[in-house]
Picture 1: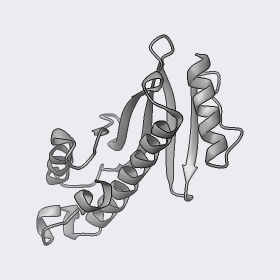
Picture 2 (picture 1 turned 135 degrees about the vertical axis):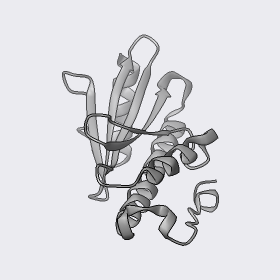
Picture 3 (picture 1 turned 30 degrees about the vertical axis):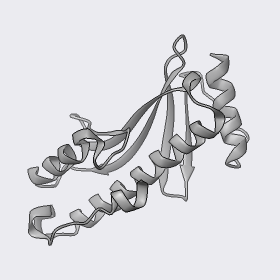
Length: 154
């Protein structure tokens, strides 16, 4: 418990949010660039595991081909890195999620993991917003989309 709390507090200090700490439900959040909200949720204090969660988009009004695009992005992390995209079956909200085992990461590695997670979240927020602007919200109706993930995140 102490390790997770200390890591989150130290991370908050590093990024200019010194009051970043877990609430009574063992969750806290951070907003990056007034656009990306990252939730830090404790999964297991004993094994020092947290999960990063970030809302990406609402897919309630899009074609099934968008779901296929998300599945393809999850394939071996090709478009998500160590994170994964998922869809809340009740709300159709897309989330990017990633577990982190805090005791296996240095402070610098933790910061790098969160930074990479934010970059992937930002990419998918923009990508899905762009797809929503296409006719019928269908990525198949657009020219091939070059995600640039290999260049941006590797």
